[in-house]
Length: 204
Ligand SMILES: Nc1nc2c(ncn2[C@@H]2O[C@H](COP(=O)(O)OP(=O)(O)O)[C@@H](O)[C@H]2O)c(=O)[nH]1
Ligand SMILES: [Mg+2]
Image (cartoon, rainbow, N blue to C red; front, side):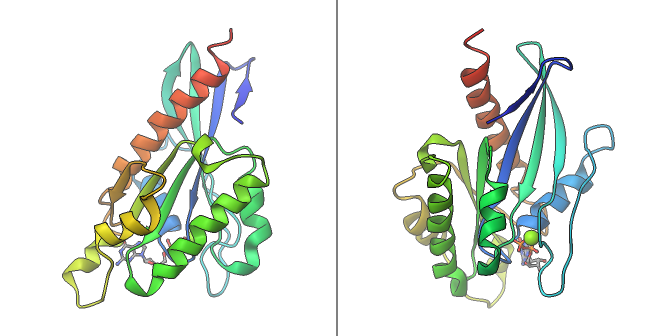
């Protein structure tokens, strides 16, 4: 649920980057953060721990102009991927307005991607949300590894594993190189703002 600040005439939309541990969620957000000017970005919060870079969440509000006289602010969050942080993943999804599911192109992560998507559906259900109710795009990350000898999944395999039922937009990406990062963000922002505007502003 978007937060509407009537005094400031601002709508805050919450977009969550979800996916298995080590798929590149934090790398996406850091790339976006570094590419944005100071005027457009807020403070990024990251908690680093041994073994994994994100224990809790990253927060990145971006200003993207007005809708219906309201300033829109986008807040980007990531979740920690490891199994023991189940409770945190659920908490970060509270009030989610849009989702990016980041899948890892590494062949050895195939099952992890599928399990993480199932985990996402289950966690949304706890908020009485079906995955079809929330704007969602998929990102197939680490495509740069195509040029190496490391075994990676084809786009067709990723589509068949993750997107057969959903049928949403998907983007190949390399978060380390920044390829596809803004394509993903622009599409989910567009869908999220449209969804939020329809839900909250149409009734005025
Ligand atoms: N080759 C390659 N490595 C990546 C890419 N994105 C992330 N990584 C690496 O994967 C590891 C995990 O990334 P991180 O963003 O911490 O994953 P998170 O657990 O999903 O937040 C790091 O070593 C990153 O440098 C990518 O597009 N290509
Ligand atoms: Mg992370």
